[in-house]
Image (cartoon, rainbow, N blue to C red; front, side):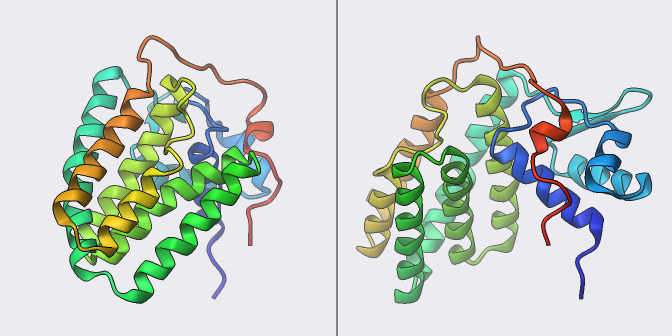
Length: 228
């Protein structure tokens, strides 16, 4: 069955936010989105409503929609929540991971390494988020998986707004160390590594800096019609 167009619009805009092509504060005008995606404004409104539910878009009466602008306090709250949620996810994954799960994690790490070695920052960001979501799926708790999906998306937005040189999200060896601890069933070590990993990401953020939108909405979204 064909995916509804508004769903595809949501996916492409979420990709652009995660890839940091759409920084905080970017206006998401209905007509501009309708033109870019070759769809009607009713479909755009449905897509914006879904994006608002992810808490990465603000939709205010008489002002339209824009990519959310988190405060420094919001950012600290997000990373505190990630430490709580992803510690539980890490524990679950360690106890449930099969040989196939571990192979999937290692294959994902290989993709991350290739993207980083090739200097493909957008793909590296996508794969870094994907690692955390994959770990959540292995953990087997659908509620926690949903939370981490939202939190990693909001983290990408925060890093886009406040990030410094550490904006690549995840250091090259930190995910590998986590996978090895999970494979060894070293629960204390894995939990310690997850906590340190998330604190390292947060430490790469400077709350005194921000990045303004640059270019037209269509140029920031890139591409053309939504992906199939």
